[in-house]
Length: 241
Image 1: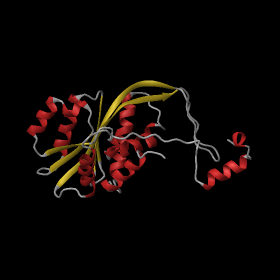
Image 2: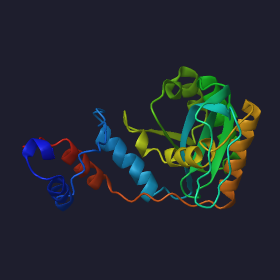
Image 3: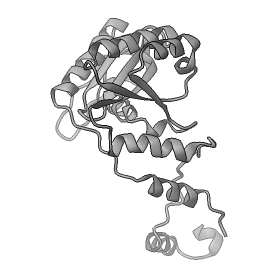
Image 4: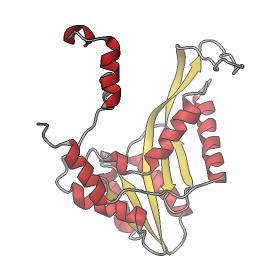
């Protein structure tokens, strides 16, 4: 830009800094095309900020295709002035899927590793939630729109368990699902740093991480109102003049 405009490099840097411009960076976004986006947004955010009394609010999803990656060589430990290291290449020892239910009010997580993520596995996980859930309480479950959620067998299970109420996030709105924050922390703090010789090792590490999380749980706090979210989305999609 300095060569193109005929000014000094430092002048360009000062202008960018003065106007807080960062042309070397770009962020992507995707807006939901769900016609019921606003209604679903208000429904889910309402469960977060004003949950029903004498009820349980669970954010449920699965993290699929978690790879049991083993490094080709042992990494070097952390040293003064040097970061820990690990090889860029790895050995793949299979995959697992983690089904997780995040209790919004308590901050605890109930998880179960399974081989696949079909409606059969989803039903088994729902039965796990049913057995562990407090008797007599309504259980509100926040879910995405993956096909297994609306499978006929799942709908029949739901009809037989009237205390379960499903709330679906809008299309392309998985960021509304609170359990995604747990998956993000699991990836950053455990999976990316790990070396797993087998699927059994990987599943043991995931279960241990969940246990450690539940030793010091923190309730989920949602900060934005539906109005603030809608205003920001409208600003992102406003025409540029």
